[in-house]
Length: 130
Ligand SMILES: [Zn+2]
Image 1 (cartoon, helix red, strand yellow):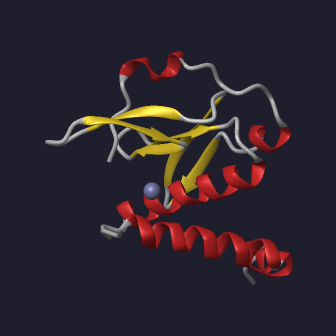
Image 2 (tube, helix red, strand yellow; image 1 turned 45 degrees about the vertical axis):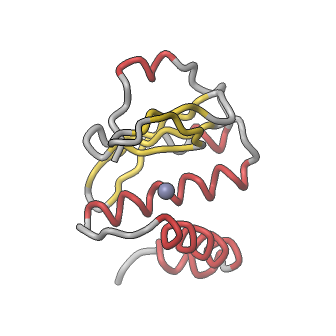
């Protein structure tokens, strides 16, 4: 879990891109998350705990603030994977599940591949329920 430093909003948001404009907010298991697209390719995140330090990240999530930050200056394919990865973190957190990074990575990679390879399946999943 991450608590964003109060100054994180000083980072300039990424300029308008159609595929970003559509995703500034996500409902995840009934909770509304803001998505902040930052105009950087990575950012530093201070680590909590005993071995404090700083880590370079492309995204992170604050469950308490219901906020996902994405380093938006990356190829679109990377951004899709990164955002889905954070969404899976949110799902697991809200479900009370503790999973390791490898599991989250595998789920994000696998889900993105299946969804993109099967647009008819996505349409079926998101269509009306009769
Ligand atoms: Zn992760």
